[in-house]
Length: 601
Image (cartoon, rainbow, N blue to C red; front, side, top):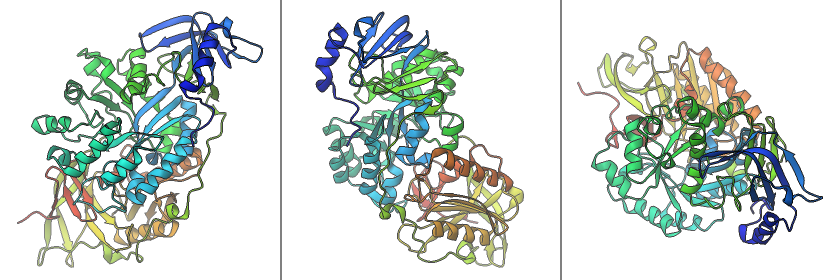
């Protein structure tokens, strides 16, 4: 099913040898470039590259002997020739786009390889959803590898997903052509405590010779961390400080530093390399979660590399962290991640290594983008109805569904409140004194406390879990609802007014998923995400424009938090401390247990 413009190395070896020797003409020759060699960390001026069958055949000072009558000759005019950029850990669904539209969005930014974990769709559609993502990925003109999701649910017993992933599912997926490894092992308590199911999934992946992704979302670097490392995860991206980065690489993990739409974890960790002097080949750059607006307006892996350089990293070292380090980690060093003979001919021409303008992108030997414009097609699957009809509320929600009853006779309560932390995945477990009117606990605008509800949307049970959240600064009567609710992807509704919360929830039931913002009973913004309630197959620019309108609507309701929507979408992620919400209740993620909404008096 993979794009056929690329031949395997065994299929092309004889021709590559002939082209390099000058016995056969190359398909493409790039002349007069400055070769950034990520194997040796050298910058080699006046270099040429010869490409045949989508792979590099010759990389050296003069490829004139490789040029024939049919060879396309590109004059680099001294531009830097750098490897195509690789995103080591990311979730396509976070862009609210299908694999095809995500690829279309990032190709002009120089991304030519992605290692994707579709655990969002796995929670909604199970193995069938993973297969759909995998199959569309293989159609793309760039390298989109799929990691088999490991944790659906992410924390068994604390949430209910649309589907569950089993060790048998993992073992089956390991035989698929585009599966590169096991997705992030988020159930780190399960690994630490020797859970048989988690260890069986890791074993199935290692038995297939695949890479196991990690997710250790805890600041505890004591025996628990060491137990997790012993469980087999080969990398981790959840670190937030220098000590986290150092601890992971000392244990033989590759440490992934992320710059996503809401995660700013590079600056605080790259000092392990720039100041402490640790070997940079153990460090990798990634995005994790990037929404469509970031992709369209700011970039993708090029944005991360620029940021790492701005944080004091040597440009070539930063490029290693986004190319060869990633390829090596996934066992693909002989296949991609560098400009060297036999590798896939993924190369970017740029006039400056620090600001990294992406002037020409070549993937598998074909020019796929120039000066920000994509030049190739990104084929779509025909997504089936089952993937488009996934929001099942059972019945319309009403205002009373969002009422929170106070303990009998109470005129005020001390409630546990989820505290949002700007630009970080963890939340804080707060407590606030809240008033009671007619037996119902009320949100408190003065304390920046509004309501949050988790609305079941997979099986139509009619279930609603209610709680409180702080940090969004919403004002007046409003609500925002989303069917993107990592990782179980029920529906999260946050609001200051229960009637608006009911209206927002019902609107998403009507359109089949997405995000909507209501104020004073009127819809201010809507982003339709009809595929699994997570993705749109519209172009990235269209989705980004709707998402930007959604962000403006949130601001109109008083929210000034950076990338507030990303924070909203993570409020049900029950594997990242401290406090979350699920369909089973309020979750204390420091103890991995359901907790009461109210403090005892």
